[in-house]
Length: 104
Image (tube, rainbow, N blue to C red; front, side, top):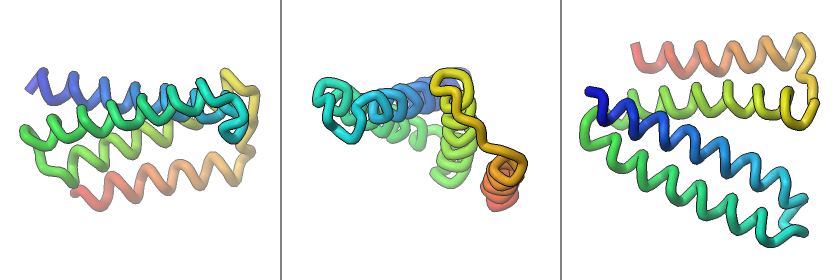
């Protein structure tokens, strides 16, 4: 079980790298950052395709999505100094709870 979990964490990490790169591309005005973001998200989906060999797609995608949302919020907060506010944090919590609940 360590291999699919490792692949899943790698896929989530690449997803977060892609989002960071897309943000840095400033709407693809900085082409290199945009291309790096596209390559990272393609690699993330390749890893996710390996993960679904070992676990159901719904479970893998729910974990991937939840960790992606949480990671994106953390990157936005600590790297780009954006604040969500109380309603935003409650919204993120509901998204994560909803994704997890779907898989129960």
